[in-house]
Length: 137
Image (cartoon, rainbow, N blue to C red; front, side):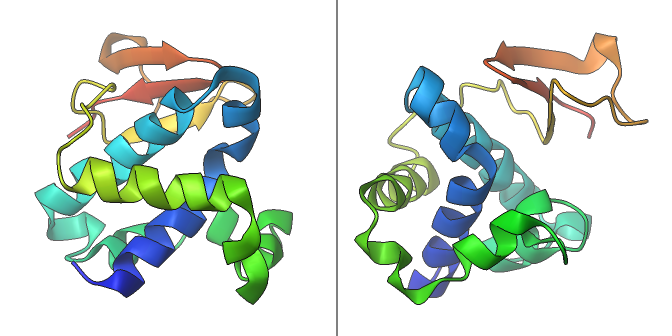
């Protein structure tokens, strides 16, 4: 794992879960980090590095072309944002196993505002704020 991997993971957390943090605290950031780290540890189709996992097309909407979060998370001065700094702390602690896997080994999640075709009630591991977490693999 490189500093670049941790930066991309932090940016992904910021893009995917900062709104949940504002409403519910750090658990939302930790849970999204758990999913990404679970995918990284499984390797294979998800990617061999944290960067590959985060940037894999159509996996995390904040990196999709046209998503308003993409422009935000690519800003160089994002490091000045206190919430982004917290995302960095979460990224480091989750990747090192210091903080627990709140998602019980989940590898997928979605916002409650949508229901992807892959979402199956019997695969749900956690409901947290406006996200639902699943173990599909």
